[in-house]
Image (tube, rainbow, N blue to C red):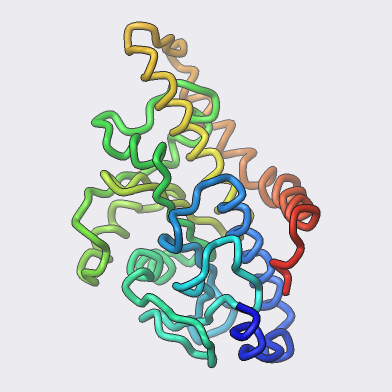
Length: 258
């Protein structure tokens, strides 16, 4: 790891201040995913669009654990997943298939997060998908789209179908696969994923007690909560929760900023 970091040189001096800020935020998000136990060894990805006309993106090196990722080690790639800056790390172009489809189709999809957590996968395998069983689920549920499983995402033709299924929504349950969120910022995408994952976890625990014991909310309440979520989630995530999460990671391990 130390040898690879040395081989990177001074990445900060090679990129704009705006890109470096994005690198710190994305590296922080990777560390937070690991901190919450949402990582899947080296698999799955978080990505963010680099400002500019080149259509470049930042993504994780394919051979690092999420708790090893730093701002400098993030790989800058093109829409096909190939590095556009010298890097000592491996990349996984096939792993960028889902992300590239969304980044290219949605101007507001600056950040994309895709996970394979046990709870997310469990709900993705349920016929009813995400159910309005908790406040957390009701706040995010109206923003959730669904995409049927087509095998490991290496087929570029799947991009069109995935984008069509996502539409204008900001979260997706990939059937029999996992969860995905998009945001205008890393913080927004992360907070949406937090809500989605917490909702999935609560649903799995609730249904483990038996369907007969489930208390369903009163009629009209899920719709009211969904509207409240649309109004407040973006502001809360960007202005309040995300800065607090970055401060938390600074306390836990500020090396993500390297």
